[in-house]
Length: 128
Length: 130
Image (cartoon, each protein chain N blue to C red):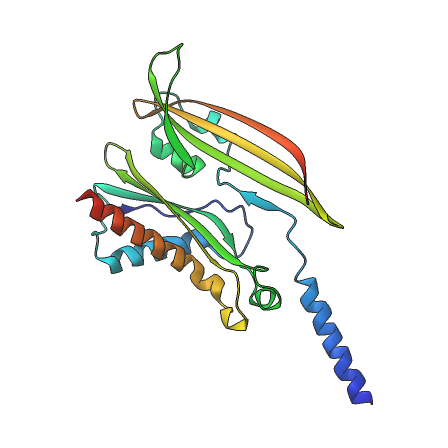
């Protein structure tokens, strides 16, 4: 009887231990650029190269080109996006979460860093 | 070809140096492939970012497939030097999402799997350039 109790206790403790390591992750990161603040301090317009940008921000998720009417000069653009999801909660048959999206565009002119543009938005998402 | 060290951009605080692991794998797989010689003054350069990594758990996968997935996402850029032209951007996501306890240790080889896929893509890209 004592042996059976001990065995059950061990199994219960083992189960609790396993379940405690199985708690869902509450933060999800998508995207790789980390040092948004470093753009102004570490990148120099007309001097910094694409490799300098890659070292600070990582590989772009997209790239292309654009013509801005005010400059009439073709710019190459690298596109970065980060989406952070936090505070995920499951309630009955729906899930709520806080989402923060950052979009960053890096402009190059003749292969050199020529400026950047970023915006961010935080929304509360709900899914069923 | 010159290979720059892989940068860990995962924002994870773990004891492993996954940037170094990815760099080591990239060196080995490129050498094994016989595609390029690795030289510090190569005309081609590879930069490498570890963008996502999740160690996962074989136990969780055993309980429910998809839970506790082991994942790695790596992106490699191929540059022409000295012009710094970007010739290709190649990404790979490797994951182990299902399986029992026999998938223990997936976190140790998942980076190698992603790098292997990247090197295969470099092979195809290189072949298409000829």
